[in-house]
Image (cartoon, rainbow, N blue to C red; front, side, top):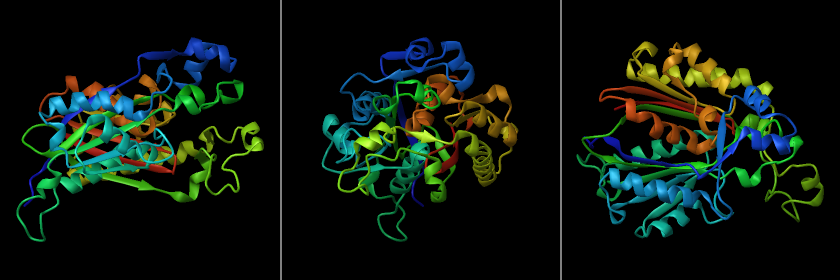
Length: 340
């Protein structure tokens, strides 16, 4: 059988600049305390001008590679989960490949929004454990080391005016990188599922610029209407997201033959922290074991789970079981169980 794939190294990067609620209050028209109480977000971080997700991921990648004892030359594939690539095209993975000085291997972006890290991790494990040929005992050596990046720069596309009060303070910038491949150490993915429901794309989206908008991808009228900023009907989505997060979490726990009480920690990420906590409670995870990345550093879409995992893992002993779950635009959602 092909060897088991693990997360051999993990690194995360939050920008230097912290954007506090009191600073946002000046442009959103409400007090910092009101923002914190309404959104459940204590702080978020803002990328420097000219800084893209590949820049944040580069710093995270260097830490992950060092921990995995992996040289850049050993990478066989780069997968970058992001909703906010550095430019329209090519993808952020191509930028990261160049900045790392990585070899000429495949470098691709995946778009699964807040479930992006789960999607990219699923692909990485599949590549790292693919046999050389049908029925072969060993995995394809080309993919012995797969770099998974997940990151966003949301701040440059947010409405910094009172009309953006609902969504703007909920988002943050950041990135994380995992090195995935066969090994003896590091957390293994015991179960992973992710899904998308395309019937609800307009409930949580950023409509413009859009290639379907002809002859211009965004017009003056679109800009005046704020259609180039993220929009969401959070109240309408709350019950559905809570249900989907809980359902996916139960599925992966069942796949592992685990009960919620056997988990050592859970990271549940959604743009509304209270919905994430409610989903964890529905699954039966004790509140003291639940972390919500959005509450800690804003909703980083694809990057939130991975950044939260890097921050939380220090206190987890060998053998710990961790639930990861996230939901966001798409509607996309998913869950995974890692064992350290």
